[in-house]
Length: 357
Image 1 (cartoon, rainbow, N blue to C red):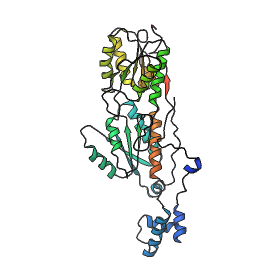
Image 2: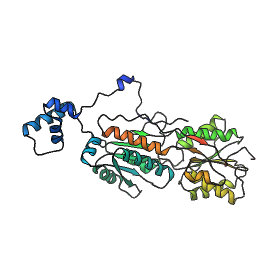
Image 3: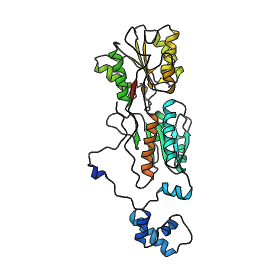
Image 4: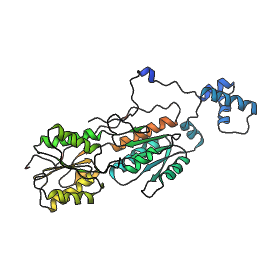
């Protein structure tokens, strides 16, 4: 399964995309006829610079389009640069692992992260204005309606990058973003269950970032596509109201009452945890009676009984690459690398098997 990391692809040649080399402090010094130390003093507002010299340096800076390299400035001055992460959750695995990837990459580059947790009670416009006023740039985790709304309202003049749900085909997020192809991952997980002989697969959804009443996020879309491709009319998806194990347990109890259900794909591993418990209480064996597949490969999934078959997602890699996109906007001459995080993988464990075990 592939992972998509760019939103601004085009058909231009490599040479056409290659940016012009950014002007350096030494270029400014040569243009102004001064030493690079003098340029540094002008940039940092040092008072011991003649007015005529300051004007020459400022004219050269404007003419060359010079931008101070924040990394070099931080190393020289000891000033730590700050960025703000906007997220509605810091505890669920996908959010926490993405935040970890952002923090690790930022720390390695000399940036500090502040985290603003969004709540439905927030005045979002005021929150965005406050976060933007703190300077630096914004990093948005947009897996849910609050995060998606924050990304939509990020001020156009503030550097911003995001980690988002896979957007619909042909559409791109409003700001530079990275995402995993969980639509394809869900399609492949559903196809795997069908290959085991299950006549259909029921889906227990997580909420989608678009806030639609029907739980038709990219994972639901991939599940639906796999069934329709096999000529199977998809059953109504369940859930879509939460991410946690309690929601999984409540929905799982209803699913366990139907003896015709033999395979369940869950929108994340916490939902799957609740489903496993509900099936156990209903006396239905996993995988003998019902196969269960989760999503995300949270740390606990390998230690459940039975161990959970799940889709592994590299959230930390998504966080690192989102930071690289933002850093490319902040630092003159910094080119973000190609996405390096691993693709999604189906991790087959004990909770899935052929019909009847």
